Every structure is written in structure tokens, then in C-alpha cells.
Amino acid sequence: DKIRVQDTGGQPYSVDAAIGDDGSVVVTWAGRGDPTGPNDFNPIYARSYDAQGHALGAVTYVAQVEDFNVAMPVAAARPGGGFVIAWQNYTINQNMEYLGDRLILRHDSSVSARFLAPDATPQGGVKTLVQLPTTLAGFPPDRPALAFAPDGSFAAAWQTATMIYNILTLQRFSADGTPIGAAQRVVPLGASRSDGASLAMDGDGGFVLAWYGDQFNGRGQGVRFQRYSPSA
Image (tube, rainbow, N blue to C red; front, top):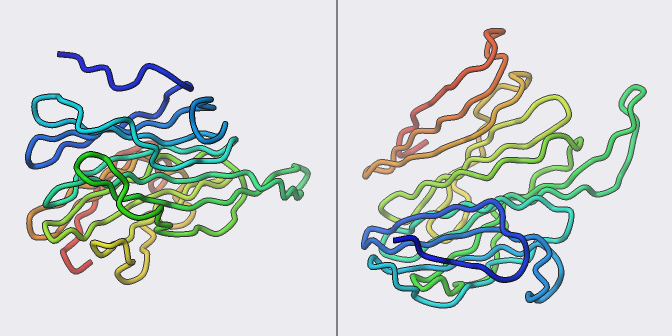
């Protein structure tokens, strides 16, 4: 049966869901200008359900995202119960400059996450997984990708958008969100757009990253994937 998750306040967009080992489900979405929320910015919400479809709690405010930002949340189930919601912020910072004869803006971007209990109650505050450098404003970033290992550690992939190309980056994190090692650029600089990242992890902590993009060695659009060992 169809289950109504939300029908009041704001304009929902960018929906994602995840299912846990016990069949529980979390649904997350972003909303534009919800007048019932703490302010008129763009909040991110979540709500969880048990395996039978019964709500485990009320709609949860995961984070508040300032107006004119792009927030595309992604959900993942945590081993042992609970969930994590992650999103990439994209803010035009109004610093204008000329690139040739074109007047352009710069933007700030970061990847954030919040851990949730099985009933979608937030556990701790919002974590900034990575603060990205200010870059030329271009295409808004796609949602980040997440995948968890059995020990609770996880991998995240995200893109940094510019006027010319998108940079796809991969980073591993411990179970509490602490970075493990250095971030890795997946697609070489100048390979043009790389979008739609997707991650999947096996029981040993190895994972695969897939994405699509254009101008792969001058061959036009294409889909690629890459395997990583547990120690990558």
C-alpha cells in the first residue's frame, strides 16, 4: 500500500529513501520555504517506518538550509540500526569577477551529514564531512553518494561543480564521521562533467563507485565504474 509521508508545509523536492537490515525504512526530502518550520529557509526532513509501514515517529527536521542553496539529501542505513542523511550545500557567495569577458559568480560548497536513530530522531548535530574550496559558480552539485561497511565506517563521493567541468571526489570515513586518509579525485581534471555517482559496498568493506560523464578520452558520453579495496 502507498503510505503518505508528508502533505503539509512547503514544496517538497529531491526525495530519497533507505532500508535497514530489519526492514525499517527512512524517507528524506528537502522542502522550499516551509512556513511551519523554524524559519523560511529550505529545510531537510526525514521520517522512518517499521517493516510493516508504521511510522516510528513524527517528521524530523534534519537540517536547515539557507535560501538560494541547493540541498539534495541522500539516505543510507547504518549497520546495527539507524540511518544517516547526507547532502551537499551549494551557496552563491556573491563574489563576482570577470573570466575573460564574462562576469561570473563564485560559490561555496560543503558535504554535510546527520546521524539518525531508528525512529529518525537526530543523534548529535550536523557534521561537516568536508568543506570544499570556493570555486567558479557553475552547475549545481548532484546529491552525494554513500555506502556503509559492516563496521559502520562508510565511503562518500561527491562532485565539485565549476563553469567548465565537474570534479568527482571520493573519501572514506570512520563510523563517527572522521575522515580516513586523504580524499581521492576519481576523474582526472579536464575530463569534463562527471555526474550521478553511485556507491555500493560489500561485506568486507570493499566498494564500487559508478558514475557517468562526457568527453572520456574524446569518446563522448559514457558510464564508468571503479573498484576499491577495503584499505583504499
